[in-house]
Structures are given as C-alpha cells and as structure tokens.
Amino acid sequence: MSRKLSFPVDDESSDIVKRYEQFLSGNATGYFDVEELENIVEYYLRRGRTKDCTKAIDLGFKLHPNSIAMKTKRAKIYLATGDTQKAFRTLDSLTETTDYEVILLKIEVLVKLEKMKEAGYLSDRLIQAESDDLDNVSLDVAFIYLGHGEYDIALDMLEKGDQFNSQNSDLLYELAFCYEQTDDFEKAIETYNRIIDIDSYSAEAWFNLGQLYFALQDFYKALDAYEFAMAIDDKDALTCLQKAHVHFQLDQFEEAIEIYKEYAEMTANKWETNIFIAECFEKLEKYQDAIFYYKLSLENNPKNYEALTGIAVCLLDEEKFSESMTYTEQALVLNADAPDAWVYQAEAFIGLDDINNALVSYLKSIALDPDQPDTLMAIANIYLEKTDFETAIQYYLDAQSQDDTLEFIDLFIAVAKFKLGDIPDTIFFLQKAILENETAAALFLELCPDAIDSPLLEN
Image 1 (cartoon, rainbow, N blue to C red):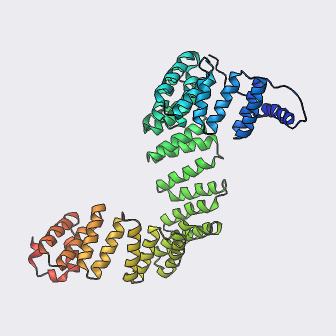
Image 2 (cartoon, rainbow, N blue to C red):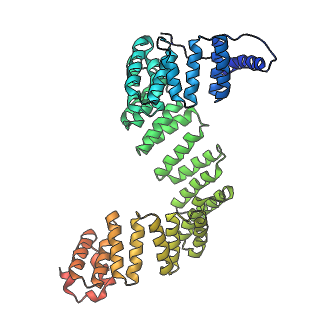
Image 3 (cartoon, rainbow, N blue to C red):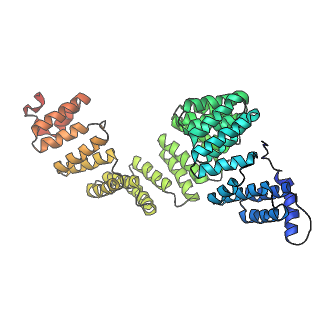
C-alpha cells in the first residue's frame, strides 16, 4: 500500500498552475500528466477554489479517463463541498484500490456518514498495513476523527502510534489535545512535559502547559510555564497577555500592569488592554488611575460597555453617586439587558437616599438574572426599610436559597419576623444568627430596641 500524500510547495505548484491557466486561456499548449493535475487540484483546494478544482478534474478525465488518482481527487472535492454521498459513491467504485489516500478518504466519508463500524474496520486495516510507519499513520487517521469531535477514537489511534514511536512530537501534540478534550488534564500535562523533554525550546509546548495550569487554577506553575515560553519567544503577544492574566489572578496587580503595558506594545487592540490595566488599578483602589485607563479605552472604542461600567464602579467607590449614574445610563443605552449595570445604577440611587428608584433598578436586574443573591438581599433590605416585612422575608429566603453564607441574613430575617410578631421564627433565626456571629444579639437590639424588655433573648 503506497503512502504518498505530499505535494509540491506552492512555489513549485504555482509554476504548474501558471502553465495550466495559460493553457485554459489559449495562450499555451501542452500536456499535463496525472501528477501535475493532482498538484493543480491540491493547489486550488488549499485556497478553497472548488470550481477551479472541478475544471482541472474535468481536464484530467479527458486526458486520463481511467485514472484512479483523478477519481480520488473528485471524491475529495465532493467532500470539500459537502456532497458526502457523491464522495461515498465515487470512492466505493474504487473497491480494488489499496492507495493510502483513497483509504483515508473512505474513512473520512464513513465517519461523516456516521458509519463508525465500517470506518473503524478500515482504520484498523490501514494501521496494520502500514505497520512500518505506525505513528504517522495513526496520526493521519486520528486527524479524521479529531475533525469530527470523536476524541475517544482519536485518542485510541494516537496511543497506538505513541507506543510505536514515543518521540513523535507531532503526534504528542495531538495526543495532549485529546487528553484535554476528554478532561484527562493530568495526562495532558504529562504529555506536554514529554514534548518539552524532546525539545526544551518548544514555546508552543510551554504555552500549552501554561494554559492547562491556568485552567486548573495552579497559577504559580502557569506563570513558570509562560515565563519559559516568553524566554524562547519574547515577541509572542498571546503568551505575554496570559502571563499578565496570571499576575492578576495572583493579586499581583503592579506586576500585571507592567506586563499588560508590554502587551499593549505588541497589539493594536488597545481598548481591551487599557481595560485590563484599569481593572488592576481598580483592585489597588487607585480609582483615578483606573478611570484614566477606562477613559483611554473609551477613546479607542466609544461603544465600550466594560469601560463605562468600570468608571461607574470607581465613582461609586469614591461616593460620587450622581457622576457614577451618568456612566451607568450610557452603559444601559448600549445594553439595557445587562443586569450588572442596573445594580450599579441602584447602588448610586442608594447613595443618593433614593430607595424607591433603587428598588426599581434592582428589580430590573433580578428580572434579567434571578441568580443574584446579593441583589436579592439588597431588595429585601429595601422592603425591610419600607416596613413591608412579608415581602422582605420572601426576598431574604430567596437570597439564602442561593447563598446561605450571606453575612447577617439570618439576623435580618429574625428582625422581619419580630416586626411581624412571629416570635417562634424570630427565636429560630436569631439563634442561628448568634451561632454565626456573636455580635448578632447586640445588632438585633439596635434594630429592634422594643425587644429589650422581651424574654426573647433569654432563649
């Protein structure tokens, strides 16, 4: 069985294609053998020019009417244009061929038609026939399954190839990818380390290793991996960005700012980079610096929701509530379905002692995203202040069902229950609150001073 899938590089193919196109235009005469026509078809296929492929195939059949190679290329074009059934029929007519490319195409067609049993039979047959080059054959077959999301089957193929040749880096990259897709991160890490053992200067392997550690939130190991990758290729913008993200995750905001600034020199996407820098300054509580970079981001991208809400939050922290609201209003013009912007607007209203409008904004946020325990508790607090105790309790309980660690929530429920005269429930929730925080009893009396003469706290 012949294994021949390589074709001349574009520089060489382009000479043949140029002669072929001159022939089509009538400016040249000549003859094209099968291999030349294969190269012409592959040249057009790599550029997605399927109509030109078809025209070249038609010429091929005129010159070489019984060519298996031309039939194979026609099937490949059918696959490229999504006509899988025609590809299947074309390849099925080549039952006697043992050509390597034909078998691979048959496997791909069968996988696309979800005929997995037949595809598996051909895959095993191909691997057995090419046992002298088992690692590369396994890789070729695995690519087909990978392209269709059949990671478990691809993994089986790649592991067979790896057993044959444990030094095939191309195979190891795909093997690591399969382990990632099947959530076997430990083996993926082990595989990338094997690639690094083979080639310690593989920036790609170091970067991918960093990505795995980042996903696993092992940020110090991720940082080490990214630093190795940057040492190999200090112009790699994506690695630089990920390194900055790691510093951010480690609360190393000053370091993150410096790396984000390095990244800014490598990319034209300034508005997003400035947001990253602004977020670091915000975490450092350097709100004016944060606002400066958020505004820089707005200059590059005026319809920048993240920058608008970022400025709004900084102004909230500085207790500049009216000013903050101007930015939340702009953000809501861009995206009225953003629950966080409604929360920021509500908090500005709270700062302005406008609890009625705050309640409206909070309720709009909850309508968009009910899974917000802090917002639910804020709504409950407003109803408590408005003496609508039953509604307050409803929202407190909803918040607690989403997050039972909310500070003093049992205390507030106890207060609302006491205001309603429900003493048994008051005792129940107050005791829970005191177990969580011993200051709860004193706070309860501050909120319910008329309970001081009650035997309630004796329980």
